[in-house]
Length: 263
Image 1 (cartoon, rainbow, N blue to C red):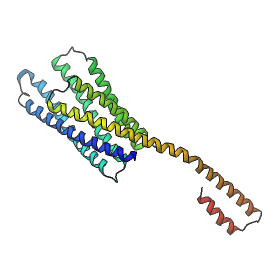
Image 2 (image 1 turned 90 degrees about the vertical axis):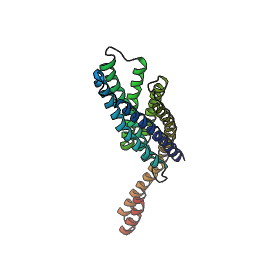
Image 3 (image 1 turned 180 degrees about the horizontal axis):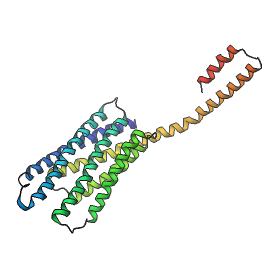
């Protein structure tokens, strides 16, 4: 049951995230339209061109995020699709968002240092935001890798929990400190925040499910080992009976096959 709940929650989160990305796309396109009037504006041409390149990057990566968000929502709502596939798709969407946040942050710092205030230093809020963006990127990409290659099902969702929590902090800082000022950008941040909160709840259900599976595997492993040990002992007894001539070769082979199959 937990697996179904986590998939539904991931589907809702991916849908909200997709709507948020649409608002983000509108904001970027609007900014590019405004910049088209200024990118050759005298002494400030280099500054406007740098901002324009940043917006073009944001436009391209947001298109990719939109595609991943749609795929993630569709996969999560397909009943026959596995939870692992839905999680991987959602992690890919969040990974792109966190990567966009990281590159945009670095790009904006470089632009500010070069064209606006060369001697300015980063504020404490900016440093904290940057640290949590880094944590988000590392955790989400770790979740993707562990989800694909780790034999322990719990590791991928666990890293996803850490990454989602870090991204929530990034989004709260962004909203509370006015990092984004336009209406569409703020709408994106709100939708993304709600979507990641729902993702966090979905991952909790996923971790609980995986933890239950691991616990059940531990409980059932002892009886299986006991049964295998009993079969091995019976095989030794059969061999001794064959050696002393108490049973025929045909009888030995028939009984031996039964115990070998049970190992």
